[in-house]
Structure formats: structure tokens, C-alpha cells
Amino acid sequence: MSFDVNTSLRKAARGAAGLAGSALGAASVLSAVLAVGSAAVLTFAPAVQAQTHAVQAAGVWIRGTVPGQDSTGAFLTLTAKDGAALVGVSTPAAGSAEIHEMKMEGSTMRMRAVKQVELPAGQAVEFKPGGYHIMLLDLKRELKAGEKIPLTLSFVQAGGKTVKEQVQAEVRALGK
Image (cartoon, rainbow, N blue to C red; front, top):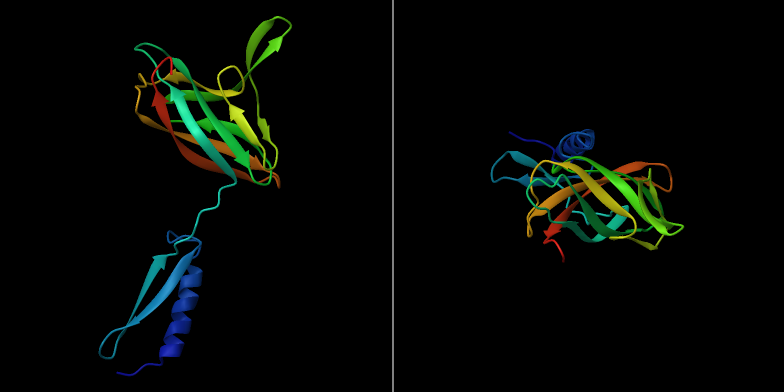
């Protein structure tokens, strides 16, 4: 049996390009391996790429809870390379999550939900006790120190595109 390797590789490359939107992902790599004998074996593997995130998250943590407690806070620092806005948060550990702000109104500290928090390009925005933070409401269970809880953060980028990024938050003991 004979075959033209160049023609076979061109056909395989076209097939790989057609798979770009499939389960192999947008970054598929074609590698051709010629077996001993008269057959060519083609394999596809996902490309190894450094992920670039629209927003970098650092110092992500959640305040631990006690039995029966139904809400807690999550804290982190976000930096958007090109500017963005945090517009939503979700986690399987809570029924809902909201972005909150605490600020002084006269002589009273008030907490309120906000629709979004602007993340100016290249500037770190800190979510901390007494300021912006994420409220986890209707907790499904007690959150114990040392656990890792996934948070999905939703952002609107400077160009208007919405992206979601998942981070792992470490639960810290109360009072820490």
C-alpha cells in the first residue's frame, strides 16, 4: 500500500482545523507519526498554552463559619490588565453571592449590594473587611478553616465582552 505523506498531512491538518470548535478546543495541535510499515497514524492533542486571564486574583479567602451561620464574606485583590468590571459571583457553597460595599454615610457605616465594581487598568482593587467584599448568602453548610471553596467571578472587559474565571478561596478560621 502506498500513500502521499504530504497529501495525508494536508487532509489531516484540514480535519484538525475543523475540530477547532469541538471538544478538542480552539487550540488543537496536529502531530503526525509514521508507523513502521505502510500506515500513517495521526494523533491530535490539545496545545499547551500559558493561560492569559483578563483579571488576576490574589489573596482569595473566605471567613469561616460556625454551625447554623447562613452567610459570610469572601475577600481578594483583583487587578485587570486592560480594565474591567466585576459584575457577578457564584459558588456551589452558597445559594447566592453578592458584591457588597461598606462605607461611611455620616457617622454610620452602611453595607449595601452593588451591581459592579470597576477595575481600572493595571490598578489593584482590594476586597476586604470594611470595604468592598463578596457576601455568600444562604450557605449550604458550615465552612471550616483549611477548606478550598470555588468562586466563579464574572467580569465585563473594557471591550464589553463578558468572561468568567474560577478561583479557589481558602477558608480561614474566625478571627484570622
